[in-house]
Amino acid sequence: MVDDIIVWWVAPDIFDVMPNASNTEGVRSALADAAEQGEISIAETTPLRAVIAIQGPKAIERLATVLPEAAAVGRFRVKEFSFEGADCIVAGTGYTGEEGVECAVPVSVAKAFWDLIMSAGVTPAGLGARDTLRLEAGLPLHGHELGEGITTLNARLGWVVSWDKGDFRGRDALERQKLNGVSPLMYGLKTEGRRPPRAEQPVLRNGEVIGQLSSGNFSPTLGYGIALAFLDPSVQVGDQVMIDQRGTQVAAEVVKLPFLSQT
Image (tube, rainbow, N blue to C red; front, side, top):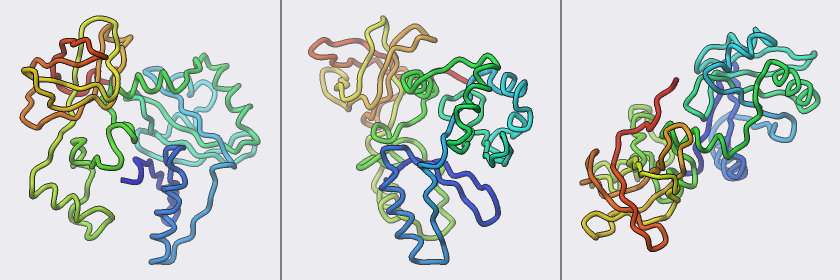
């Protein structure tokens, strides 16, 4: 898998592709290969704009006080808007499990845009906060729950695959996996206490290693450790397992995802 991307359908023949920053070159290369098979042109906009996400239960309410046009976009919808004479795009998307939007604005107005939304009472948050939020929401991260050797089926994301659209990159591999059985599968785990579970720590059942963690952290919202793990498909919700945290075995329970539903 090249990446887990967001695609904004801006116009009938214009698609805005949003890769993970570290995978930009791989996505660009894959799109270039596909473009050779049809009348497609690719424009690189990465250095020309900034993308600012406004997320949380009050995100739309706060944004509406300063940019009502952008706040009215709707969930999983895309629209263009103007800010200080510059063409911008807003989408009802995000990576936190909360309500909110993502705005793509030209770099020439990015600071002014930032200052405006800060004046609406929005609190700055970095990638550490975002990663905790996406983990609480049970959302996969490329390089952890998706990537080389990990398919959409392993990550329980088969619902995003359109099996009736004909051929696509990776279809044969997914078909074989469906036929032979999917293993391992992604599960959620919770631990007691404040010691955070971490990626790559082994998971054991009855003393036998049955998989390992792909992501883990302490959830400040829930007050205990949470983790995503790829485990043997025989594992069931409610099972008790152990996590080997640098030689110390910590008890964990297999739980249903997401850890935390949208508020």
